[in-house]
Length: 279
Length: 187
Image (cartoon, rainbow over all chains, first blue to last red; front, side, top):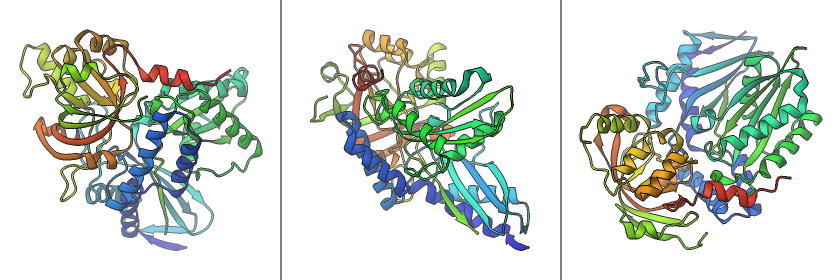
């Protein structure tokens, strides 16, 4: 049994908040740069150029990439041989979020859903916990902006809809979203499972490095087909027309029930931010 | 799209407005105001109840933005555009009252476009998510109303060479419609 102190978790989360909100991953910058070379629309090229320039300014001047520094979404992978000591795990994470958003001059956007009164410190975080073998404690922080989050949907299809129904739904969702989610987007898809499992799979799919292949050959093919279809819509960067609507489609799947086909689409803007730490 | 951006100054006058067409790129300088969801609701509630606004919107350009807090030594934090459709139900009233420009991202409703045609106004798209880049164009920022709204408070900004695209002009031209049509290769 390995002991991990809640103070160390708080410190790690604080740093991840600031890091994720100011530094765009190399994989994302590379995909956007590649897209720029292939983009036919002048407006689209301007948008992609500005996006790359923005990432450089954010990193060098230590300023957030986007003013929507998101709702704090945290994925934990906790080794089953880990013992968390020193207090409440959830409170340790929320304290890290509190400190990170304050110290990093990040925007606090969480509020009460009924009164709409801002809670003032960007907590509570949305925390997804997975227990895995081993004695590591992995924290992935993915601040989620709601321009793109609002465009996400879960659909419970009847089995008769089949994979064709799922594909149409995914492409249609992107078309209906247009420029709202700040394309070029990353499309996270959760296929199967239950209502909530599909949504979590779709969100977790957004964490996969851009440009990486899906280890499942069927899903890999499906990802390529959907990306091609989505980029043929002409929506383009910012929805103003062009060939780059999505940078990637990432799919996770899970067995489902004989009576259903859940399909979740979680849309991510071009600012595909996340940072991780292993304690 | 014209390759050379047009340099324009806010507040806008009708001569400038008439020369802006969907697809043009512009560099905007001058003085603008900010406002998003909560501020729009307050503005329209005040107008509907027959009261004056605490600031003028005549000839003004409003930027849909909720910036991050200003770090030391800067007037403002990251300040990219927010999604505009959430302001659609309020925009026509403001356009009727003299608002001449809006900056945001994403398509506008038919009602907003009709009001833009009728009263003369233009909608600029800023590149969504470029909060750091846009922040560099903002030279001064001060809260002029509703400080309690935090990131949603109304600010007066002095901006310089803000890179924008004319998304919807006062003639009904809409790049959010024509752009995707032009580049669609769907069978």
